[in-house]
Length: 407
Image (cartoon, rainbow, N blue to C red; front, side, top):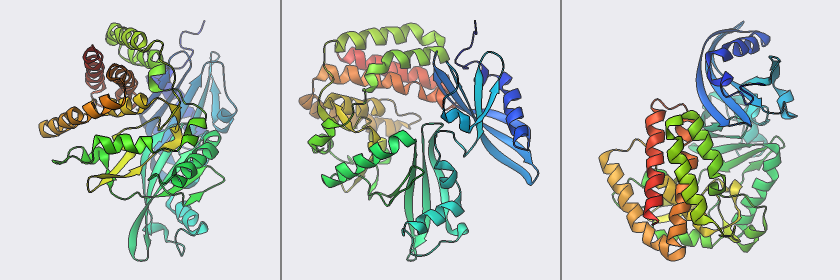
């Protein structure tokens, strides 16, 4: 029996070096050094990891990003786009960024010259921009899931920002439909400047600034009533879309992921699972139009009002408590704040909670928020943060406080 069927041990240990070295050799290079960068583990199902590396190529030395995946049950169709290595017990798919097997458009979105050509082809820029005039920055990359890059280019003498969203093929058309649906209803979702055959969405920058920054302002960035009103303004058609299960439904899975990374927390996590599962038993899935991943990172604000709503891939039917709980969970787990920042966020939560409590059941709100917090506890390990153990424990602390506050 294979003691490591999901590859979680292999891909996070020095044993992976042989695979990385073989993959680089296959591409014509020589691996000089490497370091684990990101881990996305699903116990007993799959593990995906990325590694920063220094590689000597025939044309010179470069910093590279390598990816590797192991799946229980063997390779998938998209794994065929990577280099497959087998050790007799499992198969490992290895690739060199940006050739992510599940994100075909990333190859085009990752290079300034390709982005310049893309923007001109869709008449976003009136003329072809020189490569050295394109500022390209990776905003987020979940290997084999999604990526977002920020492109800044000159248009009519002004530096103009666009976001390039790189999607999996099966999610591309549904995401585009959601943009069109919310824009048609007058919600402040991003306009779509381009939708490409290789699953890229080009979105202009929203007005205002991220709520994730504004939560630290001396004055409230917006009101709780505005946030609830934004969600309640979603068109009824949203409730007819395919359902995405709320974060809380997978609390067992997330708890297992955290416990696998940090076993001393296992008993506390099991207590949380029992409390959340028991407290929410019998509550139906709901049929309200919901965002599905509503938090401060998805909102833009200006002059005390909401000006933008991002990442609407998850829009669909659900319960309003899920959306509000997601926001509460994120605000309850902001990391690395100063004393002043922590006080301001705490005051904001205390101000907003009574409004949320008037819209949804207060106990359900807190239990669902605790469930979302458990999902967020996977983040520090997944991102290989320098002090991920301590940050993970702090997040679990926040989940326990929410459960206890539910009574």
